[in-house]
Image (cartoon, rainbow, N blue to C red; front, side):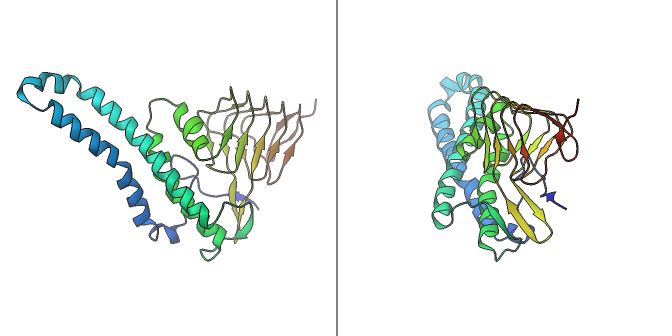
Length: 245
């Protein structure tokens, strides 16, 4: 039976425990590079304002300075992650398919590596006071396609192999997960969602699912692996099937 991989964390980007320690240095390196712009900014902030005549201005601007540093950290983390991803993808591009869930499998190994690279930037972006920042900006920066006027701020979306059309609504706590585990196999397939699609709360859209235009999915439903939901229909259930009048 198909089962989605773990959703532990702020976004569904798990890392195999067998590889977590191997990638620890890389993960810490990404975090370290992300703090460089903050260190430079704080250096000039202190240099220019830390003197007796400007103490009052220093403390008045401190809240604004903290806010700017938080956003600067988030943006720098995204840029650093993207640069590392570009380098990694030169060695092995993301590929759809069914692979062995073994660290010796090249596709599975690089999928975990990509998740490691993106994990810090997605985690730190989740603390942004603007709820649309992570899904609409960060995931788009990593290659997820989200159409205009689509609402998906309160759901979990895989950071690759997902395409969402225009004017879609995805309910709270729904999950669009383009990867999964089936016994000793690792599956990664693209999720395609058309225009004007409405997905209810707490739905799970599994790998390989294609949802055509004007489809509505009732809350608490989930699709099967490689499902095709025909346009202008209402679906519900486990797995989702066309609702009969």
